[in-house]
Length: 550
Image (cartoon, rainbow, N blue to C red):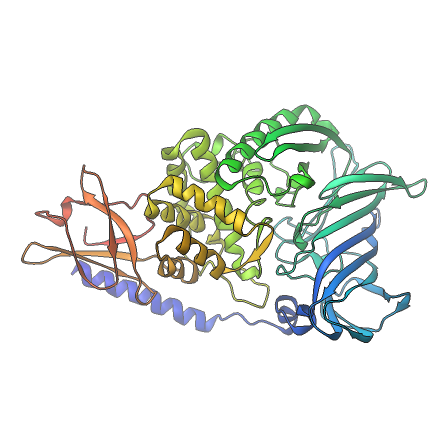
């Protein structure tokens, strides 16, 4: 009766979910497709270099300036698309000293060249623009400019635009699949404050008696949403970290009133870099350095210039989502956002649908930080504690081509998934080699679901295809069903949304070591001798599964 009731509830839940999906199916617009789809007007050119040169009028919340595009043509073309939110004005587009005609459609801008740009040609154009950018009301979860003031009344301004897109405040080819190879970011701000952006400060110049311009050079590839402005009355402290690739510069920019709190950042930054270089390989941006920049918003993984707003305390604003205590021994924002330097910035998803790649590995990086400093048992306790925040509301992977991510479960459920993969591989040296290998093979590259899965399958010599399909592309978790028949033998199978689902799982008798068994979706004999199912113990601590029969 218990078995029948369970199956009834399982399938009702799934059928009900499908019905709800049919009723509440998301409707995507032309604007979504223009933003998220790689049309020929975007694939025809490969971005090589930007020079973003802007002035920020803080009093009027107004920006003006230009962006220089240098590109290589991938094929012959006469028209291309770049992106800029329609509330901002495209003042003109210049090419070889002349203005080009352009058309706007929602947040896309289409430019027509006078002659065909031949395949393989290196060419350039420049976009002049201005306007009042969207103000973020809840940065970093909504995008735009975060206009704030510090306790002294001085301007404290930052940008944050992941998901919404960098074109919310500057013109660019706004698709994660094409990272610019290098970039110069020049920002003019009022003299009472300074601007901190990605990369290294190479020059400061007086524009006039009211404004100073800061020039930041980025040597490494960078995705669009990572490009950031941070404007404030900052104190600056710098030091050198002895990293895996040699000396790494670390810079801290905090409000002058918080200069005495920099020691908190220094301790956490060094501990984080030490742990992550061990697990993931060298910090990916030695040439551009590593910075923590204090912001009014909580934080963002802006490459080589991490936005930090956790108020110089451990945990996530002083709390531990796992309720284990392990999350209170380190500063969540420093660890999590630094993890993105490897997963999100070094390895970048081509489409926002695969944002789960960024967030699942980075959530898991928190556990690996704990593992490095406090041990594996503490690490796995933290991951297990995080399960209470999982919703199982929709798949981790979003729809492709419309600039839409999947479920917020990509964080906690994603971290649980990677801990399961580690448990299945059951060789921590091999697991560390795989994580380091990922960052080496896909160094400064964009990837998708297939790239990650293919690499894991190849390097582990285990086929995780069905596992990832179930945990990433479906919302429910698989259920392990165990029965005992009249002859006393034990049988088990998986019940899952994924057709032909199979996944190993560790099973043993209570009080004895557990063994990894290969289980499929059809009943098979479990080679364990037991008088009763109750004698069995499933590793549900490290496997995020349901169990039927025990």
